[in-house]
Image: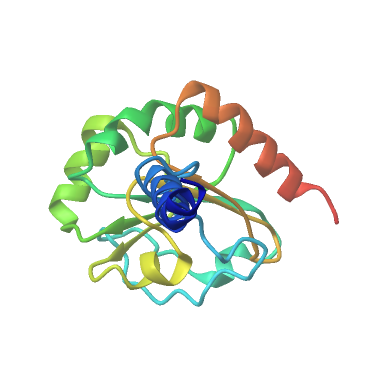
Length: 178
């Protein structure tokens, strides 16, 4: 009897390990993909302006003054949801730049006309090259960049009223001398 039980032990151990692995695969503790560039300099940005008569976003913009960098798209429904929070931050004097992902200038302009334009500069990332270089996993995403051009914080998803508090705190921390 004892010998039969010993024969089943490896199968039982295998099933327990398999169950734990399956549980972790189907319910990971963190489903978000975080940028590995937190604490690193913003990658070199060479993108065209998204709109005629508007400046693009460049790495030089981040010399000396922290800013918020918002990754968005006119076709992104959650980007509409975060528009009021971005407008509120802009009204507080927080400089916000934007990079529109896989978009068209006329659609970007229509989006800004309809939902508000909190941005100082707007660049167009037609092929998602900056999005991939910065470690962004989708739209919308928002980054706090300090005055030295380092990525200090990443917020994934639309900004809610509750998220604004953290973003403003991170922006203020980026303004403080190190």
